[in-house]
Length: 63
Image (cartoon, rainbow, N blue to C red; front, side, top):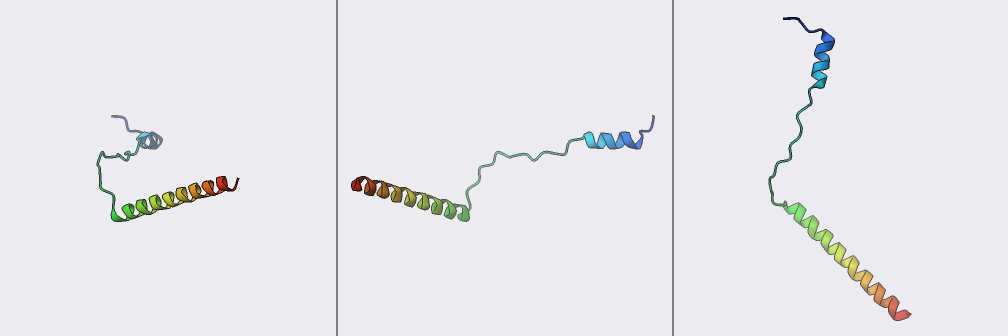
């Protein structure tokens, strides 16, 4: 069998794709830190919405 040249071997190695990272269909529970973060974000969003509603009502009353 004929031996490959070094260039042919390197080209073959470069042509092979690396293994891909597979995303597994695993459902996991959120960690305690993720739950706390989600609650804090939700509370912040609700506070901003309440403030904006109060501001809109106040501006409407002034007009």
